[in-house]
Length: 252
Length: 252
Image (cartoon, rainbow over all chains, first blue to last red; front, side, top):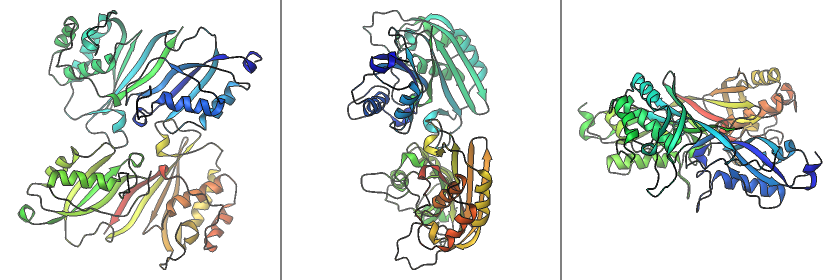
């Protein structure tokens, strides 16, 4: 592509990362974020500082199978060659899966139409190789109650009670949770969550709510009634970060 | 058991650990070894400093599914209670799988009669969640040549060329490699290595030798002929630590 040779072109990238090996997406004082690792690789390849823009942040410990980001850069060779050059410079635990040129109005965050996460639960104690990638629950879980709760929470609701927002937020807390599903394979449970947008910590608090119902601490109806409470009920545990995986970001 | 109540009893423990989250088995300056983590948990539970003795060290990055260690301690309750108390105090990435009282002459290292390791290879590029647990090889491997090489190296030989010893070692470098096997499942290869004893870095250099044959850099016969060379041939790569798992320590 001629246009890629000398001018600045916007590029969309999909990356995967092991959240246990970084301190979240965004850089923090004295700790390396995934974003820093990718920006350092870009600087090494392109010779200039490049700022990347993710579809959203992920908290420390949260993983991504397909996080999306964009950046603007001049690169005189093919996208495949840029991908290969970056790959050799990225540390263990983060990989760029694909890289493509996009129109200049594409924005990883603002163009996104929905996101899908999944959360991994392990019934019993996960081995040391798996424990950074799931939430181990040793007490028995009532899967039927969890499924009932999921069905009640699915749909368009005000999820204020299921987020961890500051009190002064002015924006709407209504979200359309179009999918909240429980998949079971042996001792491994997976909660699939899909919405046009998630409030801060909403995915992990929804999983916490399903577990509260699974443990029999509240009935499915009681959990769903928390939607009405509008503040943050103490009974709702926030599921630990290490079980959460950003699975897919949707675009038009 | 009355004898366990007030007197010192020797205990044998089996533990698993993710080598990517520690700096080897033994403590190092400014870096935490698996041994430190376990000794810290023991001190927290027992109130005194306890020294543990492993079946052997593992290098930084090497994992264990069943490393064995022993220690002497007074504990007035059951072994199961000690195990439970320790479990809550161990960091992520290390777990004690079993704990039992043994005779006072048991020694994790000197009583061991053999060890089994396995090494994980990935054909292509492992994803970011797997790359700390295997060696990714992007060039094609000739599995037939690797199997032929394994067959030639199996048995009792002087493995000096397949170790990384200092020149001044006086002890014999003859070892009985009773099993060197290649298992294939899709893009995942597993090399099983079993011997009464391994020389320093022998397991990783044997895997390196199989890969040299797999890549066609040397024929199986040429690799096997290195057994005669007695020094360290530069052609033999040492397979990276992260693919190696201590699978089992055998005792009489």
